[in-house]
Length: 512
Image (cartoon, rainbow, N blue to C red; front, side):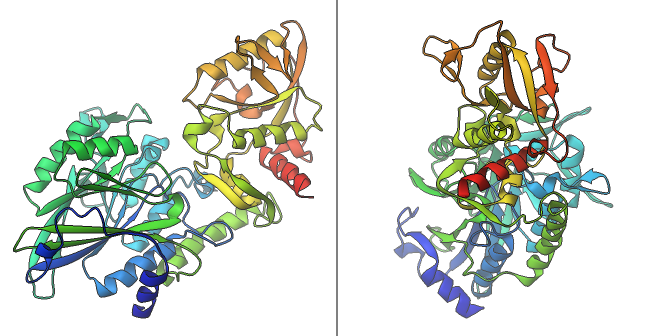
């Protein structure tokens, strides 16, 4: 184990930043110096390794933490939000109930994670399901700006066990002890971006609550750090307001970054545990000086897995494989290689045309042998919230569109088609924003099909995801709309019966 740790330090740290220290290094040396290690992950939707096992995997993260902890007992594992949703496993049903993040809680419990904060995707879950996940947690949640809207008013979210209820706190404190028994305490506060409004959630101001939580925590701590799920610009603003904040462990952006704002280090690892940040903090009890060093460690197939955590991961991945094979014979078969990343992120697909949206809608048209005038899918149905690059498998496509559904061939009047396209454009930032194939808008605002103006009285044939015809995203787009002439629903044996199979079919045809 110790040999592995040395190998990891030498061979697998991608970037090392001796810069960004809060205080000069010399005053931390000597008597009273305590070394603390933070292992940071963020935006983790998948419990198992991805890309054929090449990168990621929470059992590997657990092994990294365990290896470091062998040499440095004051080692802590933190997760900076976004982990309960989205995931393909989460969409599966067991005993008639969707898993909805239960698999992630199970794995995090096995990892003995120390602290998490809420990300915006935690609130994708219903109030009932989120409460279940909180109750299943054997670890601590922290948030300074998120509150539960209840009949009694705004309350902290709480973990409710059989004999006790533990409310989330504005901050948490942890103890660290050196070999001589010298003790110190540090605090960690959390804040979350208010980007996912729900009736049962109230978001307070990020900055005011970060300052408030820091002020409370520092009274009981030798130093305080942030565990945040906000944009990098918001992290920088927090750092500029709390100038004595040494470190922010952040999330939300999905790709690694290391920034400096004043004396504050702001670090974010890659999504899905493709990397972790390892922060080394050395605090001198005598001089009260703190030194921070942050290193990015890539999580690859060169790193061993924790056997304990791997057993839990395998339980869930075996369930997934079983369910996938009911739909597709070889879920792990490579069907395409993407030289440029396919953008499946929420923000992009709900606000602009993306190459992922183009791939999906192109495949929808292909499922009907291109005998349609175009194709439309709601950006909100793209749930992977990540970028796919390199080898892509069938299971990756299921991760992109976990809820599936069929592709309908709809004949409709041009006037309704224009109304649908205009509504989709107006919903920028929402799930109803439409990804399009063969439909575009000219500089003067005219909607076109294959470069020609859409005529109000002409009938167009369009491939729609079946969800769009339910009127949930576009209220007037329902099967009983009088401007819909005809709807063709594919049979179970047709490619269009499952939008994911349509994409797999299209990509396979391009590969060949």
